[in-house]
Image 1 (cartoon, rainbow, N blue to C red):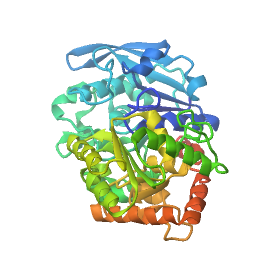
Image 2 (image 1 turned 180 degrees about the vertical axis):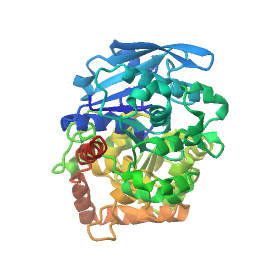
Image 3 (image 1 turned 30 degrees about the horizontal axis):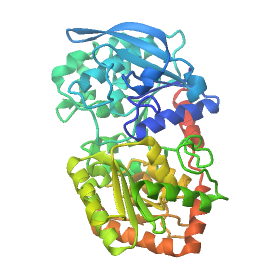
Image 4 (image 1 turned 90 degrees about the vertical axis):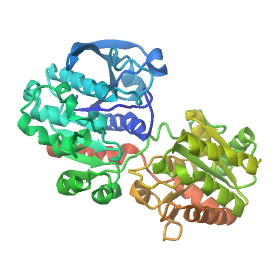
Amino acid sequence: MKVIHVSAECYPAAKVGGLADVVGALPKYQTNLDYESAVIMPYYDNKYAKSSKYITDFKCNVDLAENSYKAVVYKVENSFEDLGFHLYQVKIKGLLDRENVYGYGDDTERFIAFQKVVLDWILQFIKAPEVIHCHDHHTGLIPFMLTQCTKYKSMRGIPTVFTIHNAEYQGEFSFEKLSYLPEYDLEYSGILEWDYAINPMAAAIKACWRYTTVSPNYMNELPHASTGLDWLFDTEREKSVGILNGIDADVWNSSTDTMIAKNYSVTTVEAGKKANKLALCEKFGLNPDKPLVAFIGRLVYQKGADIMAGIFDRALDANDINGLVLGSGDPHAEFLLNELKEKYPGRYNTFIGYDEELSHLIYAGADFLIMPSRFEPCGLNQLYALRYGTIPVVRTTGGLKDTVKDIGEKGGFGIRHEHVTVDDVALAITRANKLYNDTDEFKRIRKEIMKIDNSWENSAKEYIELYNLIAK
């Protein structure tokens, strides 16, 4: 195979955030372009694993200090036919055979072991891959181990690409766990170190051949983004490339989506949106004659969760609209959002949790999707919304700035705001309500945004060009 993607998540095998959607689509589009791609990820004891058939591909033991674990690399049977690429999963008894992706006290040990098994698996290949593509800090030690660890000396010539999906999460841990890594010359420990700790993201940026961000604007923001790695991003900028994420146009297709109430295309968008909105409003006790403003996502500080209830409170008070939230995260944010249901019965509702099928119905049935993010490396929700004729209301940051043009500009099709405050976001929603009431313009924009091509094809080509550049 030409490129191996290494990731903690991959849709549909395991999904926590947008990383899973990216890693579940990019390899398929690369393979469609005759650039053979595969994914290797951890095995989790979840619904996907229990419904899949596996072929044993490789076995080994993996050591972490005095502890030794049995590891198996499985190939998911029929993954190429079902997903469009070969999917491999690493099962480590006692570490990676758990239900959840993250959230355990020994996550450091789990992902170090995973990365070591990945390299041991590649080490026994007859023909090495042309590129190893690592995604986020859970795979960030691979470029270091390839270049510095004695065991993998024969693979030092394999180019590595490291993609930053979110620079806020860096995976740092104490040097007390240094013995978990394979043997290397301690003189080069500085590659691992950042702020007196081992920092996998910093190590990857230093050791990889190229690092990428998931939008051009996010790449420009990182040297000033207060992630703690600002200076490093500035220093290593010559190695950086900003490539905008795409979406899987086969999965996110209103014409064929089996998770929505009625399929529709650009030519049938009015009837299709109306039917899906009716189904959604019936489900949540809302009035389908009012504009529906929705939020889908994790209720965390990055996404503006701390002011989300205030945003909807202000917007619902000032406008004759409906509000709907699908998400989970901060318990206090969940509590405040649920409380609003009593204040605005029949106009506002919530679903605390995550439901993939419901998210599709919301994209199909909502009129507007809000994304008041403090930072957003790329954002996929606004791309899904556009695909389904739902107008995004977003903050001017990261990939949101790259993908949404404000209606106040020539050729604009979305609504942007500059600040993450209740006033700023509520005002943007008021602008959305005004657009909704301009029926002809609203319908025109809704049709236009469905024609925008945000599929992975162009981005997949950009990654292949990058691989070819460094693999020469």
